[in-house]
Length: 131
Image: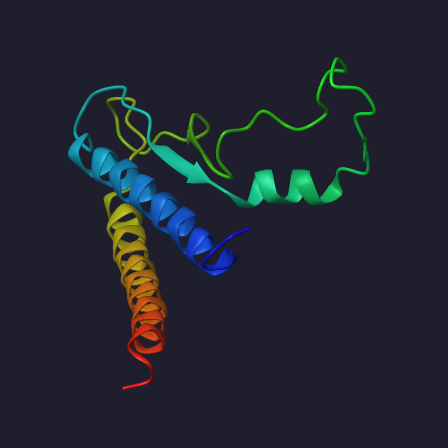
């Protein structure tokens, strides 16, 4: 039984995703001049699409059977972009793109924090008896 429902857990996972994305973008910006550095990205849509298109549904009928669940620890992963080179030194960081993604991710993160605060304020109101 989940005390708060799935919303807070979903918001927590979304904040984790936004935090990892922010760290990844910051690392890309910090290494914008590093020779042969390849930019990294956090992907979510590819994993979501893979899970949505998976048509195999399995059920374990015995505890000794191997589980069919995917062993992915999170719904996102960090990947390296090897398909491009923007600079003469082998580096593929596009600083304008990274700064744009950083701003977008900060707005996303802030909206998640505000939504989470709203959920906790609602719970506080209920606990106090609506006052």
